[in-house]
Length: 430
Image (tube, rainbow, N blue to C red; front, side):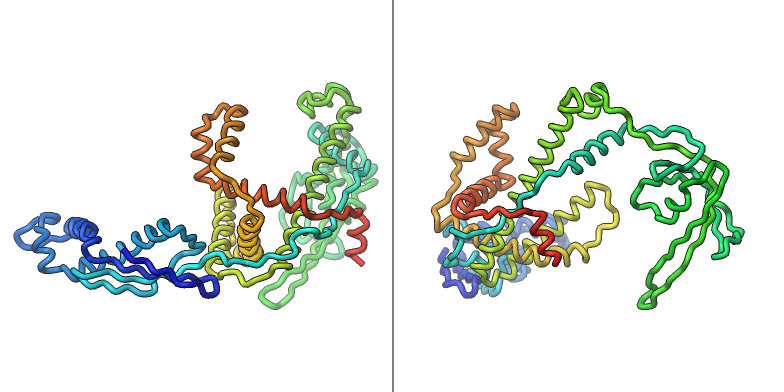
């Protein structure tokens, strides 16, 4: 097999392959045996026609069909032998098969371009620092207590910390019933931020058996035409319950934390610790994203279109699987596709920069490092190191480890400038 590798043009490489017929005779013979399974001729049952007769009657058709399959297989042999790295689907651009003589074909495929990287170290990048506020701690504590909230019977609505059960009657703007069937036993939690403000304001001060009114406006479009409709209701209160958070006893603390805290003081420290870790992680992610975005902008280039499309398809397929996993039957592929277009382009560029950067800085991950990781994980999980190695290889863990090492390099060679996240947010809004 003779292989000619042309110089890449705009990240597109062309491969020319010439194979003497004598090197593919075994593949051709297999093609005849495969085709014979579906051929039936007078005097012969299906699958029993002699190969010699097939060659006499269908040689050209069978061998031409086989030549494309052989070209595809031989292309990947050439890729492996020459350590080539296609990054998108290869395209067969020319094939010339001469029976009993040769098979010649050309394939175009994209490769990751070689970049002259610059300005990826000694950068000063803003890193937001989030300050923990007591009100956030209190809010988180309240959220935990809400899992054990109590609803106690009451006669009147004193404030928004009540739950009411009502019968609703739709009326005109003057409060006259429209005669529609009433909506009965509707439960409304007045301290829910999503509840209509009219309902909250007009229900306060009412007793069981009393009624109040409320209204809201619905705006929607039919095509380009805007429709506005007002709705008016009368609500008869048939039940009132006061919403009360339970007392934060040691026993309740142990229950809501699953014995990770023993009292209110320990619960507060645990909440503060969790929020601090969350904010630290958010700060780090924002810093890293800003750093990578700056590096991509400093080294901008035209990413291979086929590679960008392949990344885009992966994102869509990932979202499709997530939708199926979580039972989302309203998967909107068009919306998902539009959302991921800019992210696919950026991601494709970053992956190409990542590979170029790892080569330039001689950052590598070899199989021995993967084996060491498997050994450590095996001791923690009890899963055999061999099984973990197979899993790592199937899921390209070596690529993930390489990216981690590149990230460590970038974090060590660039400077975060800490800023107050709240102050920055205020400035951005101005």
